[in-house]
Length: 575
Image 1 (cartoon, rainbow, N blue to C red):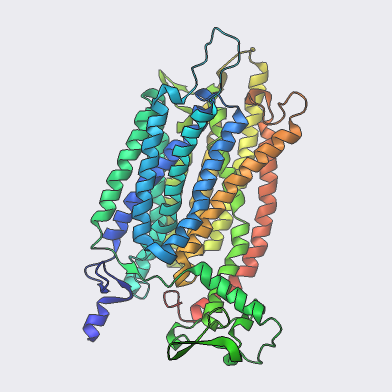
Image 2 (cartoon, helix red, strand yellow; image 1 turned 120 degrees about the vertical axis):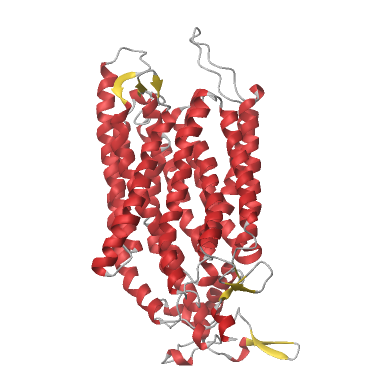
């Protein structure tokens, strides 16, 4: 019996519902199969996003600011739906089924997009260079077909991204020292692999879009998603599956409702008098923060209800201390959550206005012309190099000198925010130089005599920043959340990307409205050669600096109150 227990994972089962055997399930092989589907998801989503602004402006004939907002709204919705996907995974479907179902939805969306970009009826006629009349923009039906495809892809992305990282970490047993050390590297390798997918999207797919045809490129995305789904399903027998503990949203609401009902009751002098029915080994140590919620664990006369012959506590009237502490753990995530989405507002500029800048600049290397969307390859290269250096150099050195597995999650987030500020400063300086060339160029010049490589520093800074902040956020939100709410917390993390994109859309609309003036140009003119994009970048740098200050305050408040209870209590898996 002891030997059998040593080879099984206590809180995981295999595909038959039996205790998972360590020798037959989990580890790097099934984790790698899960990474394949994430690579293809990135290939599809980013292959569309990084070059979509040129399609909206050049083919659908939409204004610059409107095109940028469509891209950021699409990306924002994709990540916002991660919260919904996390809810479905934790409450009903489980991570495995959630990944499988939403991968099929994303494959359907990319196939529809391939068709919509192929049919001439679904796009306006090309501009006639011999006629001075303004180009005919896409009508409602044409935009509707495009939106339907994009938002099917957004739904697929939401379901996939909320579950992939959590299902990947499920393949490692935190109670096993060897597997726990493997998990420490999983987050960096996870991000390295999805960045590889993004790199392929920014180079190969963008080149196919510009030189062969968008419908062909999107067809590749569709086929890759179908193949990735088949690869994912092939590992069904090798995966470890964690049991769902019910809807996390319902659990949170139960604590809030029970505490509100007992708001007039006095808390006992000691936490030992509060109700907790969890086994001793699974309990989370009581903390003094958010003491109002502790009232949900006060024992009152009418807290029980009779079900048959059994008298049980009503969870809407009384909750255990452990359940309350789980809610507190989620609340502690919110200050960091609120101070990180500014990074993704800056990230949004890399796939919108920075690409538009590139379309106006000299992009030729000999006879080869670099596609404007492919400039984001430098952005992804910075991510890959940063991840590789951190994984192979920084982590081993810090483990050797300080006994730590690299920077803490909060330190990585802070480094990422700092890099984003440097990226916006570099972007503003590059735009000042580009605009000075534009003012001296003859009227009607389509390609300015300035190298597109002037933009490289902003891509490198923001790319390096993403390498730190993404892995830091992912680590923070997964390791600081209760066991039964990990998928939801991953969705919460991904909403920071969503809010960052939506904030970008808001700032673009606001700045265009405030600075537009009578001519309707302003900082974000329809033709960026007549705008002041440098001022917009400067505004983002200023807002990001203030946001970094707020993050440092929140990090100082979060760190001592979260880490020590976690270490001294039952541990993450048990909680």
